[in-house]
Length: 273
Image 1 (cartoon, rainbow, N blue to C red):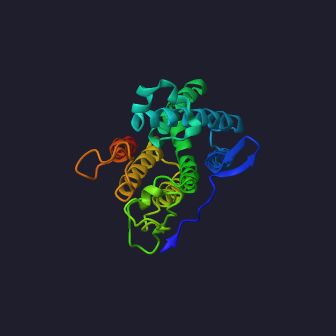
Image 2 (tube, one colour):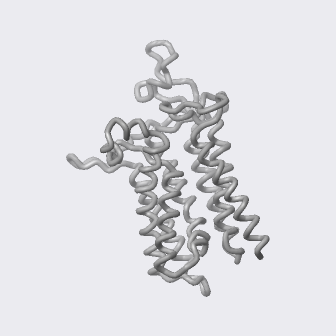
Image 3 (cartoon, rainbow, N blue to C red):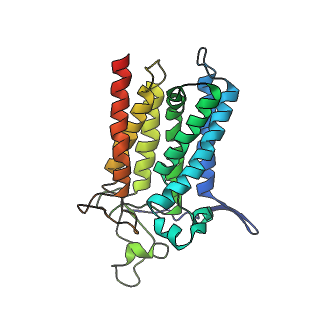
């Protein structure tokens, strides 16, 4: 079995200043999305300018951060809000949810589209292929943080975790055990499927003219399917556990509307054409 490379989540420490790898991953994702958007906007007939790209990326950054934090607290940490509403603002303690970030980005795109006089799906179809790059870097950040592990596995790529850092993973092991039983590196599964694979599919699909809503629909459909599938090997959030049938997770519940909406958007896009 492989052993988890125990990476320090703090990339740089200067006095009281702490720069975390997780934050750097978000920065890298935004930077790559911006560069890709600028490249696509530069194509003749794209209908986008460099200034429009800068604005929509800025709007989306606000949507990701605000929506991701609010979504996490509502979907996974509502008890923390009830205990102390100020917990909502303690972003340094961690906690971001993709589905909340998606809602935040949708709101951001609605505002941007209204200001620019564009149809919402003109903006959504342009932005959708950029989203997986941020997802990929975000999941790598989860891996470095040592969070969102999967179930135990006998597969050769399973990772054994240091018991000193992950005592919960070794709770049923003899005292003095150094490494846990191997677990699925579910963060890397998500980085590969929801990130790299989804990006390549959407970038290729959107490189040719498509009917309005088609790119957005494909994004919702594929992300929902990828996330729903990976949840079967990912350990559910401790504070929630399984919500039904000893396998249904909050991630699967939140991904189901994405699958349905994505299929509907694709159907409408091609029927309308």
